[in-house]
Image (cartoon, rainbow, N blue to C red):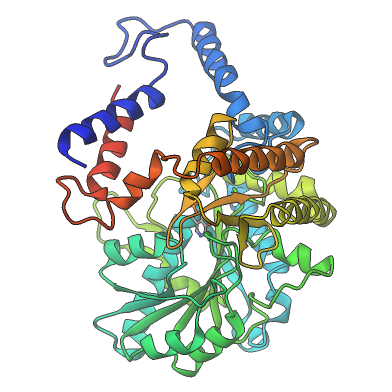
Length: 473
Ligand SMILES: Cc1ncc(COP(=O)(O)O)c(C=O)c1O
């Protein structure tokens, strides 16, 4: 790809990301006089209507975890009642501390807090809320770094993680000055315990396992990995951002879920997202620590600022208390039975789609996930299949190493007709590829940039362009 071709790609992106430029006036500057509230609401409402079909019909992977109108209304009502909340001022809004403490405690209650073997000695599981999975991971890595420095004198800290672990761990390493050590996974997509063991040295500050990892949705062997870390005094983090609100309930329904929570000796912290399968609105996650003393590694405080005494647990200062309220309300309104029912529906839809995909000769499903469908198509360019599905409204994630597609089943996918139309569309797409085996795709050349040396443009340039476009008016 050369620079002209990059400009073309960015222009195409611009058109798809900025559809309102031609419909509404752009506000590059403040309007001189405030616009009528009703007019603002009308414009927002029209944009929301224009976008609704993209996500509400179950055709977008993992973007919306629960989208029924009654739930959305309830979340809006909860927000309305808590608009002014900022947990940075707990004296003004003690209800914010109630929401946070109870969300943390309820989350720990189904992630093995009561089965923690150290519970009597250390007082048991403690936690806090963050702005999302990435924030929970950033906070965990920073805490592990400081723990390793304090307890083991580690000065060149690293994070040892399977290749499948979320990029939030790389981001944490980049932000906080740790070395990111990625270890290839086994053929089943899970962490390779022996290879991970080889990668751990005396500077290792954290070992990571996922329950499950994003790409194939498979669960790493947490018991083995955490045991190995514990033997070396190293912090072990289970990333259950994606599965923390599903797997415990699937286990209760009899599904084969390997242990990944605080019942496993050596698990030091767990990230778990209320804004995914917890069904809260976007902007919250829970970070759990095995005990209170470990949580203190996340605290920041200063006693020498002219503005007064200051403390806060995460990167944020002020935090949106209304979002904590939404997580609290979503959990209370679902209850254990709600999460069990959701897990059962998601599991059944996943099985149905998986069986249907496996019945299509060329399709190969990757990994033994309980709710993610990662699949490739033998003999054809899988990204060409992605384009064909996109033309029918499906928004799937493109995976690489190997090239594959990813659909995370959520409650939206379990709605009537979604699984059937997905299978029909995949079947039709594969039919098209049988007739046109060399059909080119949009994404293949872009992913290909990662491998090609004789190109003016790097994959990073494409990603930079993608972000730059988003910030333009
Ligand atoms: C396994 C896993 N960890 C972490 C994250 C990051 O979560 P967030 O996008 O909320 O920052 C994700 C997001 O999909 C994930 O799947």
